[in-house]
Image 1: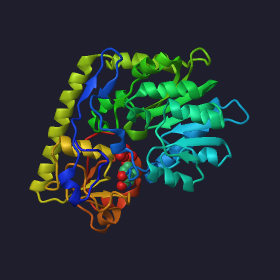
Image 2: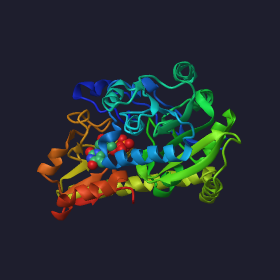
Image 3: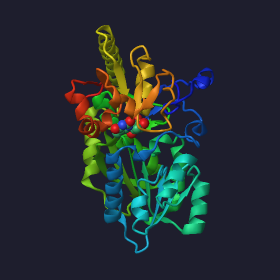
Image 4: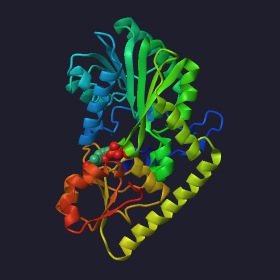
Length: 382
Ligand code: TYD
């Protein structure tokens, strides 16, 4: 597999980086993860292509996340909140706007620069224990450490947990959300598996890692974002009461077999069937002379296109609203990525919905395409 966000120019085709994307399930810590991950500097750098603000629903989601965190867990008069992987500041701006002391930590300089435009204090670094010490020296310990779609990107969770253990106040909370294993298994949404997603977490697996650092899972909250995510809340052992939602989620996971290896053998078979169906669908469109365009050059689409060996013979181009991706080619499959206007100015017969997780928002926006008889093709039912 190539890098999921490694959109490239033709002169870079010859040097494109590939690695073996091999998922695995650990029967010991119950974690679903990829075995080999590229060096983080290859993925998170000064031309990182993912900006959180590209969806208006996500902007609202982060506003709600921030307000819920403030209402539920802020006890001190002058709280201090830290976000790991703060991207373009879409979450922290909600704290900044209220004058709340905050600090974003973001290794990709280009997205961090965007955050500064929104008045979000950001430092361009990877989060670790050494940085936690510097933050404490300058700002003191944190009331809340937040993350969204970041924790699952970090190979060395021990280093994060150690840093969290240093930075968090006695009554502080660590809150993070990531794509949820239960949803991936239920929907066969194997496109969650790519270089940046080292882990697809379950409640069982996050408990096993953070308990090693004296942190206890005190609440879980399912989210619809990213095709089904879970928000986890941790506190220092015994410092806060544990919601009944935690035991309920653990029961659900055992009923789904998320703690058992054969579940993932079945998942493999389901992925293979999904691949056959999609390739078949696209071949049929081609056979009747239809134009098919990809809708949104998501990270997830890189896994789908490369796993199914789909290229520009089946998909004319991928339409995307992110300027940094436009004019480039999709990783591995080398399908051109074009501005959104190319889609609206000359509707294709069919659009393959790569941003299926934003289906509601996209269907609302694309009524004209649908009304003119445009077909939506999909490989994940939502
Ligand atoms: P997302 O599902 O968040 O991506 P990922 O799989 O990378 O996590 O989708 C973000 C991408 O989708 C981004 O490149 C912008 C694009 N997009 C559109 O082009 N149009 C849209 O209406 C939406 C919602 C996203």
